[in-house]
Image 1 (cartoon, protein in one colour):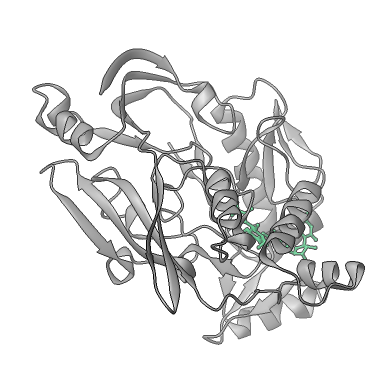
Image 2 (tube, rainbow, N blue to C red):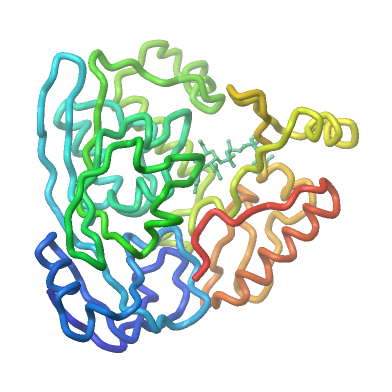
Length: 338
Ligand code: EPU
């Protein structure tokens, strides 16, 4: 365990926002987390758990102890008739992990290719893309309690997974450090190709029965065309969640805006495309200071160079106001605002 003081968090958040951590510790194992818990000063300090920093908006310096999770390692835990069970350290970069599973012949995570961030952050917001969510491939995770130092293994039932949501955003936020995640990759593998952008790829290429690597390549191509690479243009992926409304609310909106992009959900509610609504309000390419709305996907806010957290939040507030004014819908930020 390393203890560092006065650490700039700019390189550790994909939006590239400036903020300083008074104290930062890097934990590479469960034992490291217990060392923090048992430490005479650090043990009692309020804590902030940092993964890949790809889903946070930093608006101020961090008085809390920042615990940076750097647990590594990938292994096949079990090869069952109905699934591969694969485990990864929470500090493994997500995309490299997905690529590794595909190279090893353990398909199932291909729709989640190229998502920024770490393995440990994936369950926190139940990452999802192109018809697959983390919870669909989740087996269990190990977490160490930041108060007691005790390690426990949580299965899905205890994780409270929802749309971009889990118990780790609520009651267990900054209370526990996820150290390892296990995935259940079903056998036989079946591609998930129902998402419109993937159907277009099938039509374009004429490949009706792609293998997992082909699906991953398509997903990467779709993402590269729509989403900015955080290494080149700071961002935190989708800035708002897609709002879920009742069929009545949806009918009301369609009455005024017949074009609104919407998807019925299995429980009868309707998900609206926030990106479409923001776009319809004319925000694409607009900026507040150095914080801007991405030209190719209005749901993504970007750092045009040197943006600060307050600019991002001003821009976000203005977008929320105009979407509310036109559609009567309150957009909820997707990343954690700190
Ligand atoms: N749209 C517009 N204008 C825009 C943006 C979108 O008209 O500026 C329309 C699109 O044409 C499309 C619809 O809105 O008809 C939805 O857009 P898209 O397919 O790009 O997906 P999204 O709803 O914007 C969600 C996730 C993404 C995920 C994609 C693919 C959320 C908040 N976002 O985006 O996740 O990659 O679907 O599954 O659920 C993330 O969470 O950070 C993220 C990038």
